Image (cartoon, rainbow, N blue to C red; front, side, top):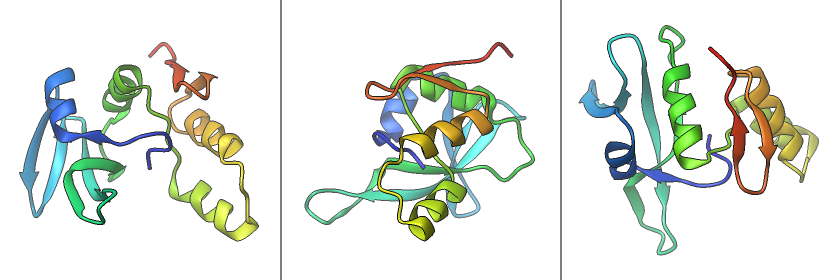
Length: 127
């Protein structure tokens, strides 16, 4: 789940080399044959309407190399993210400050080191 912002499908199409395709009832970010992520949620805007163009969450089905997608999205859009594990921990332990959880998630899921949390500046590891 993205922590610090949403991005639109249009932003991805205009600012990355990726495609967005519809398969089996879902939209997918496609980066070649071996890397894709399913777009699983949409964002409810300030008017309470579902915005089907805005992306807040991506789902990895565990069989694809998704680092190329995350590296690009983090670099282009200064995205920070966390996973279901951190979300559950926040709820169960009533944690208000998400920064340590976001840092943990990004380190564990891609080896990302956050250099500037407030501005979403992240060091991408050499791959």
